[in-house]
Length: 212
Image 1 (cartoon, helix red, strand yellow):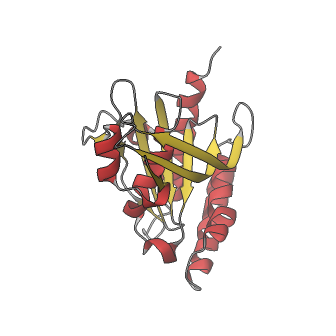
Image 2 (tube, helix red, strand yellow; image 1 turned 30 degrees about the horizontal axis):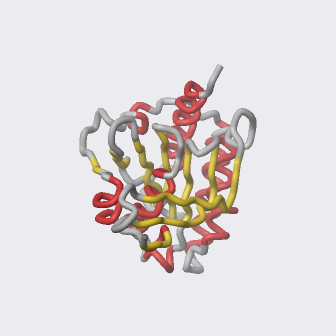
């Protein structure tokens, strides 16, 4: 079987080898649309500080992966409660998935940046210099990681520091995915508020999936 690194995989490969399909049905991924968790004044203050730190980073491009994790992503995960039980953080987790056809199939291998809550939420950080600020180039990589999850339902987040997009993958019958709108720190308002609301809401969804 052919072996591919996750960052080399295309959506066409995932479709042909693993039966992945995308859907534009808004009802399929309503979690990001219905997120209405409250944001406290203290959290708002922190998000404004994170955005100010982002504005400082933006003056000296490119946005490197390490800086994005430390300055932007880490405060978000903290505010969303992902550093406290029942959540557990794993970093640089190795993944491997193989298609069913042993003769003409492929094996996809890679390492995810941040893995939250036992393979239920995957977070992928990409460097702006590598992506040309395009999250679409990282979408197949993130979906490869999510397809390796033993859980039928999983979520993902891709960010390059300035933009954020959420992913939902349902493997109940055949793998189906959808994405959220793109939230951007280049918007006039601080859209980190919306990102945090979605993260909090996904945290509630994942808590409800944990065994009693």
